[in-house]
Image 1: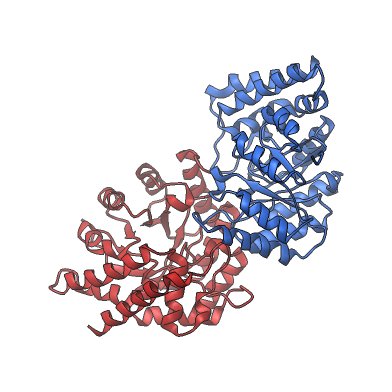
Image 2: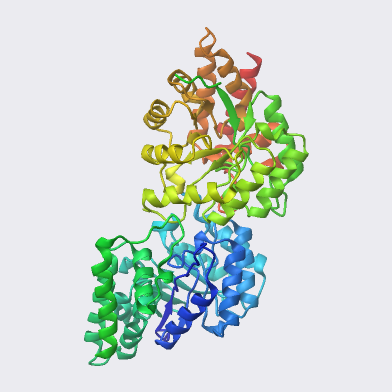
Length: 301
Length: 301
């Protein structure tokens, strides 16, 4: 079995200023805090980052701000998949030029019920249009948002056509069986789960770790779990991360994550969202506060 | 009851050149042919137009090509709704500056399960950011693609907040009951059905006509039906348009429409699609040929 290093990549939230423009200083500050907390890298501009609510120009400028802010591009796997292929090409080429480790690529997601041949053609078009040997593509399986699943046969066709370029996959559907099957069929690529509660299973099966929304709040706890894998400390660490994860699964995920991050930074500006998201209501304050407390206690333990 | 003129707006397909760039000359030629065939106007850059597979710059340039090609902007309701609000703002402002009759606006469509408050906030943000008194918004209800329905309560809130700006709605979900309820609740806005087979019902209820994919192929027949409404010729005209519509409903819609348009123009280039769409297979040729024949016969009859 191919052995992957087990890593945490955080899909960092995107802070917005009062006029809803992207807040670069807070984005860089949060990115640094996550790496300081032990994250191996960041997967910014994915679903949790509200990237699909940002223009191509905004996404490029924000990625440049991260790199100029001192974040090593080798630790970045930014999301680049858009509804329109020219946008995906532009973002993927830009991230590759900046030296990013790879890009997390949604399939085109407006049209539903499209044939697998068409999804293959879309990825092929982007890879060939970018035309860079150092382009690394991580496929993004999140059918509950994209409407376009990444099937095992699609992965196989892409890996055959573009060996070396297809480097990994993020499973955000959350059913363990899918990730298990991908890892079993394609052990040579890095398969990430979207929940830290699955890290032990993921690592045992031969996966590469997780890219989880709640790692914005509990990067330190998740890193502790990764460091504890296979040791006596594993069970307690898994319990801590799972408890925090469970709280967020009962809340509007992205608004609740941003509210928790705002509490941690003691700066309400981090909680701002772009429509169509709305701030969490008062009825969720207790749960969010509890998640933040558990994250803090996990560190102390 | 408010009386709307019953009109056909064609969601014109977007021709692509061999390198998959937007083919302006063929776009203008097809637009002219549709208006010559009797369409009251065009609703380009919607779902059928593969607009969500085009970048913002491509959509702007294509709209400019139509206007420069002699299409009266007062007869254009281009689609402008994107996943990212800055893109929707840019396209809506651009179309308004060009003098378009209005814009057909999808809600932000990447995120699913978002609250109605958030969808309201998204539309409000765009309307206020465009900040033009002559902006006319036609809401676009196509939950099978967007994942975000336009509820009756949302329409009511938007009409209350932005009277005069909310001018209409396109129902692409296809269940007649929804359009019927929208027309009954909001007779003052122009409600279009997505199927010409519903034109008689739509007109009788107080709607404004249709914006239908298959009108790319049968604009003349649909215009004949509109002109025949309430006359002895209505039943035969309805039968003709319904027969053609029924053929396309059994096929991959957008690829089949483009293949039929290519047959009509006797120019295979019109059939090109961007991924994730794929050209129709040989097994669909007979059905597409039959639809084109029926459209031709309808004119002759």
